[in-house]
Length: 106
Length: 179
Image 1: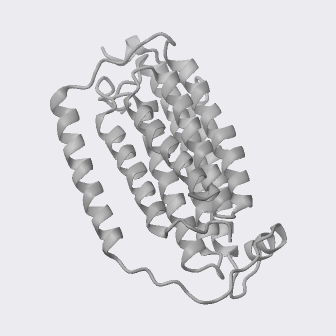
Image 2: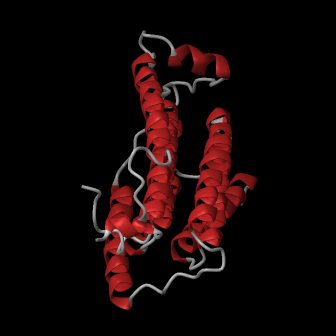
């Protein structure tokens, strides 16, 4: 195996740090696109977690691989829809700051 | 230190540093480029874990697709030279407090838990195996999530087109919205 000499815990701690950095960005950012980037960070850290678990604990199965594949697909469709919404909001309000966008259409 | 450990240290250092830069940078285009570095580094981690297929998917879909989409929307919606206002100290202090507390709790739990690995032999993962299990209904089959994700992708595509479509019967600008 290629990953000799690195314990599983290193990967998990790295994914934890990445996840909470994403949460920090989600809490402090005020621009819709940067909030979307924080969400991408969170999803990516979950992928690292799934793959490390699959490789270290259940190397004869494929669950982690496929679930990270599906997470990537969900992230892609989420980014597409979110960016469509962001462009629509920009057209309507000429800003994408979440504090200035506070009313809905109807 | 072996070569693997050096590579892991390099990738994790880049991931941590550039994640923090992504959420703290005050120029939005730079934040997107830092996000690109984070995603490419995690593709390197997938290569280290011996998942070549997923690393390729990560490079093409995340680094090639999503980041380009984000950069396009940045170019459409904001000025390049615009800088964000700095975050208020109260908000950043309390967010950092919550985040650090959560991270410390999770790390303590991880380091405390005794993981037990199976003794079964590792499976060789090649494209043939991935394709077969993605479309099989048997024991190692994933055809149901595959179908669900394809429906989700179609729905997302239609939704993105419908939402971002210009105009329609009502031509409302930003002036008519606030009477």
